[in-house]
Image 1 (cartoon, one colour):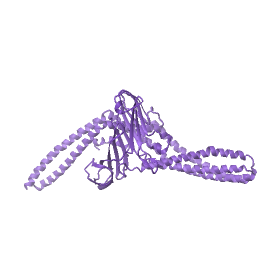
Image 2 (image 1 turned 120 degrees about the horizontal axis):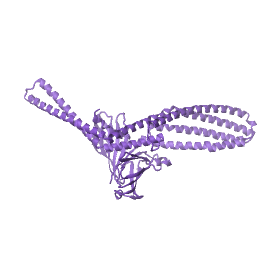
Image 3 (image 1 turned 90 degrees about the vertical axis):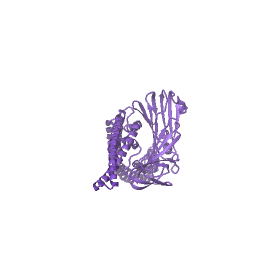
Image 4 (image 1 turned 60 degrees about the horizontal axis):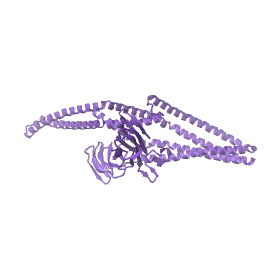
Length: 561
């Protein structure tokens, strides 16, 4: 890999935070770029579609885009209704177009100066307390399930440290890079309406406030993706249904036991019948304990999924360190120097090839003159053919160097943008890591905290194994208790005292203990069902401009006007 190619790693790394690179055949990626006015009103939208891992020949695709342009090559295409056919050379195809459909995520902005709502232009360059509210609206409501397609929305705003103090944000994080504050917020509009979980009620907006000497809106980018829950996480939720079934079995057993205790209070003859009901209840309780034991066995068999948390934390920390290294290179100017040196080297190489091309062309002209005069020898004929091949190779080399120079110059121009994106990405990773590791904002993430977390996960996995062993002992104990209850039935006619106290005690346990646990189990099952529905909506989202997209990301830029 030459040095110019290495410089493309920076923008690719930023996009990979929202678009994981696929290794499967024919992958379609869609990026929707939208420019917003200062009040959040849409100014213009364009869409880039990338076809990757494609073969040579005719490639069929589907799109609702109009005014389509090939922005990455010379491949030709034809379009009939929604079907578009490409003449593929086997290389990645990137095309761009327009669409009239409404965006799934709407944005509304509000500005306040010293507690009073104002328009952006009315408070520009003013001094005082600034509050900015970004309200997100989920327009992707599914009537058949009464749910909103789940979107994760990340907001990144940059604000100079000079002249701006006491910066605060809800649902987010602030990172001071020295000369710049990078403010990152996370939201998910429609999630509260879909789940009715009270803690998510204000998760559809971001509020930023600070004191300023001279107000001017910083750079604000908003990125949204419909990917909320992975398939592996959805499968884990099935354990909740298993636990709920076990609780129902336990509740049935407890109800039967309570009925038996009530019959126990009727006297000697009724006592005998009541003990029979108790015996049946213990049998059901034994069945319930078997179900719990089976559920714990399944959980223990899936401890690999729990242990994978350690791998995830290691990967996040490694990415965090790599991003920080890139940031340090950009901040120190090393990246800029290397890019400039690479451009200069490429230009020198291109000039060498151009000089060689002039020489080859001159030789070709001379040999062609001999050929036209029928004075050319067989050896000179062969030399002419070789020179034509060399000419083609030199022209391709010059073209490649030109493209490399343009790419490097583009990377050089976008270094500040890449720096902001890297800072925002690391801020998001830091929020996640500190939340998982249980660290406060002022604590620096270190390897020792990662190791301590992994040790806790390993301890948890070991505890699950011990819990499984305990459930086996519980089942064995219930089996013995069931055998003893059979003997108790034989002598039940002799037991006539204490029946009232026994009835009240069992009723209280059932009322204040088992029934409440069963109600909580049903509530958890209801939430699990909704979360699985949301996960399926996320998984089945197939794009904005067509219905066959593998990965979609929406990028909004808030203009200062």
